[in-house]
Length: 133
Image (cartoon, rainbow, N blue to C red):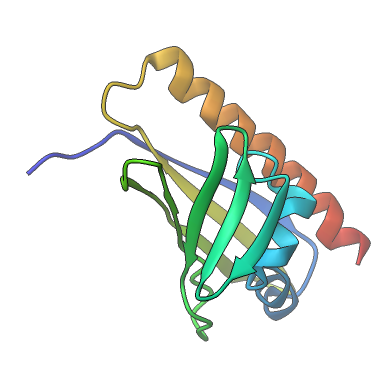
């Protein structure tokens, strides 16, 4: 069994966890804050197609659920799936949003750090969007 290096990155948001979950459970809201994932996303049949920094990619999302789970999978051209666990957790009257970033095979230290920094920027943008609602 192989275990990848992982970083869990999070942000506190002054917004009810149900409101946060409801916003994040709509894939069409991802371009508003998730520049690391996509600049646009559209539904094509059962799939979501995202315009990512690396070109168009199919993205699968966890079905709606009462647990705050917002996992998604980005599918590369060769069919490899990149798993992105994401959670919304109640924190008093606010929320914690946590994304776990896994180091992909062959990824350099520099690239892994750049990806983590991008996720941090996206989470900061998400915080701003949610707290302005």
